[in-house]
Image (cartoon, rainbow, N blue to C red; front, side, top):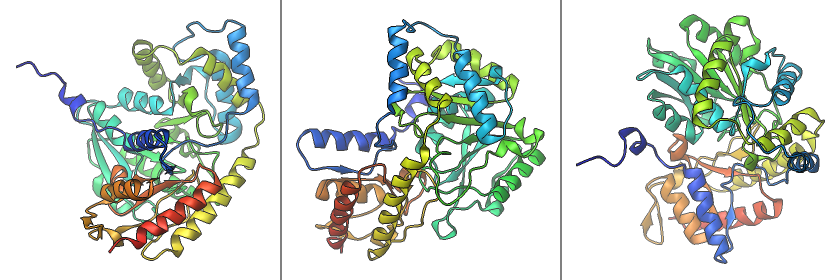
Length: 397
């Protein structure tokens, strides 16, 4: 009998974060008092000057195809941004604008990986990395990091996983889900390893503007050798509250950027023309990220303090992004109303059922001990939600 699905597509898991967020929205639409800590998007509205640029683009009739890699004005603005913010020099031909940073990531993996190549990711990892690697025909290799070590890179474990098949390592700093920001020393060491072992770095920097107690470094700055092995991924979704506009971009060595442009020309063509004009305004004009970060930090501090005050929880303080990742392993194996909590998926399902609180299970991020809360939501919801969460913990025995 003819197989209805390819083996590759059948092997891909649905995004747990999007599934839980959708379930929470559906319950809320039905009238349930759901508080969601699942969303990976800022709760602030897109700034007015960006929306105005989009409206102007529509009024001007800028609604047709553009070059597949993006309009030259936006690519020039991205080059200027990378130079000013990250001390990186790129030509516009090395920039590819795509349908979100997620698309840029897949483009990067697809462009450099052949069947059977290995791509290393650090756990806890963003849920999509593993599935994108598999979609490209490559093999994900996981290097574990632990909350007890503040999720820093364990270089001894890393060396154990590097093989002749290692094609790339994906790094994410600031990180989703942990909020860890890699230090200059860690990145320099990782750069030296990439050069010595001759593999690529895919550097996911989408949260670079949402940072508190650390400094962001792009790994490509340390030498021409590491820059020639690095694909920098970024976009406008997190920093400018533009998740639905779907604009991401990458900067890469010329041969890789050209290959990605060719692939994208056949896969999706250009990203939305109106969204590109909005993103041009976002990147080109001055925007006060600090105001949003102050609000994020207030929420972070409240959430970390509250979670650490609860019996049986341990919650490291994130340095960036807008997530906390507490360890709830002391509650695994226990029961709620006679139902056993076998894993973090059970924990999150029961939390949603009993208290109408949506959080993301750590299993989705390759961590069997933790759950992820997003604090990209109003402080009033955070306070009420954590009070309900505390009540839920009291029902576990």
